[in-house]
Image (cartoon, rainbow, N blue to C red):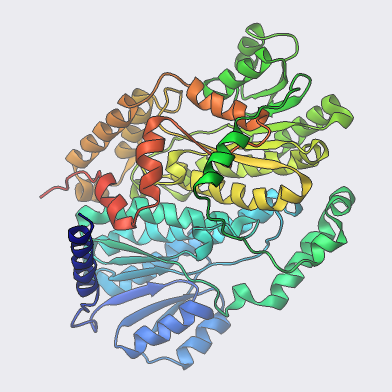
Length: 561
């Protein structure tokens, strides 16, 4: 049986190689817009395409970068000043491009602009440090894409998003890897949505190349600045030797045979004494957080439950023992996070915090990417990703003190992109943040686990609520966009929501049991796939080639004829 299978696979790969080797015959009338053309990949690509006769529209951050590029290219190449973090600048660049290409449409968009700093161990950074990088690398790419999509659809063109190997394996702390995981997610959802329009979306994943981002001197200076601005307590905890370490590499372990059995045995061991340990949980008004708070309270643990509303806090207190304490927390508000951390510190004192469960999350607005705005993406990222980062950084000193646990609630949507909007982006970001955090905190004895639930019946997966949100977004779309997608596309997207919500599992203890194990096991798992859909379908799909995953996940509605 193996020989015929190998022959079939060989023919498939040969066919794919043949298809990919075919190049368009005439490129001279095509327009390509490239961001980040001052230096590096963008600069070289602009000159390369210009030499091939393509009409290049090169976006530079500085006047100097634009002038230098114009000197080295033909008169075909045109430049514009663009700051991808400024929506007004993006809007102006889109209008400028539209007046140049007119009715031809835009053949190619290359989202290349990016920065690597500030970066460093996560605890050395602030929420603003993360946001600075994410604003450029991720939200900037989203904003540029949304503004240029009508032009790309008109030409049935190409979108090329520059990610990185750091978009597949989190190799450092800070916003860089988070942003690149987000680029992978955004590209996957966009490719699925644009397929009916004939638009192709590709991801570039460079390794380590000599550009400004990988400049050793700049990186060292950045690390030094981050180190110097951290608190005295953090510097003492990490020590001067940690700061001077230059090698940050991840050995890959091949776990086979008896080693798997040994791991299973290790993971089955539970801590003998868990009563008296403090656990802080966010998002306890309902769903997983609410259930976990009650579950751990019944086990005798001291639960510090963070709720968004007073009603949620009051209802939870009624159903638990006097051990459980609540606090009002909005994870998107740094002042609220800081106040909650001070409150926790006053309670746990010298014992430290044993467990942190980052569970708070939202899904709305969720819709096809082109229907949304930059602020729509940011609203979800502020809660699901940046809120989690902020809470973690504020509570890390207490967790290190007890050599405790961090449990971050991601999703199968953090491994396989299921929909447009900020939700999947935020979950990909959680994967990246958790991976870098786990490696950084290993020397301190702190363990970091990720929960990847499938579809469970919680307040974020209520069909009527999601469809009402999509309907409101649809109603506000400009007429030209409605005509491009058509009423049937909207209706079938609502049917897609119904299908997802119909798959929800009411037994949310499947998820909270994973969370409890991560907090109470002697050796917790790094990742927990919660639910059969996660274990048997979506997690295996995440390891398959992209074209295979796209085939199984393609849910593109029909376009108007």
